[in-house]
Amino acid sequence: GWCVFLLSAAIVWGAAAQAAAEEAVPRTKAEIEALLGAAQKGEPDAMFSVGVLTLSGRLKGLERDEAVKLIEAAAEAGNQDAAYLAGSLYLKGDAVPKDPARAAAFYEQAADEGHAGAQTALAQLYLKGEGVTKDVGKARMLLEKAASLGLPAAQLNLGVLYISGEGGARNPERGTEL
Image (cartoon, rainbow, N blue to C red):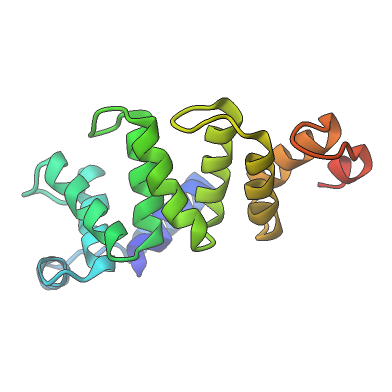
């Protein structure tokens, strides 16, 4: 939906794309009521959207902890963007207590479903041993998946691993191609 695009634009493409995406934010009372109604019925994309809008301050009426609960419920219902966002919230301690292990669990959920951002974020946790047992080989595997989906951050990090040989065979030529 519109909110997934808005969040994706902010994360992947930066401020210019985010500003363009904001045109899709519901503005009328009827649009907002429809979104809230869908969220109350348990529609994952709507729960995610309401959570994001609340955390960003664009929607009033819910507390931040309620917004996080909606995002987590959307993740549990299969919304991988919600799982990625929940992981990011727990990793940073934003609106929730910092919990890298819980962040890793949310990232893993989304990564398993092919979410390139979550694959890259989870790889970073494996590289650092933050919230998970350090495993450079697993990090490299996750970065390979995300890089194959075209995520520049994954390509850069994978290139560094190829050049260094950390977590697998050293391949400077491949590393510089990425």
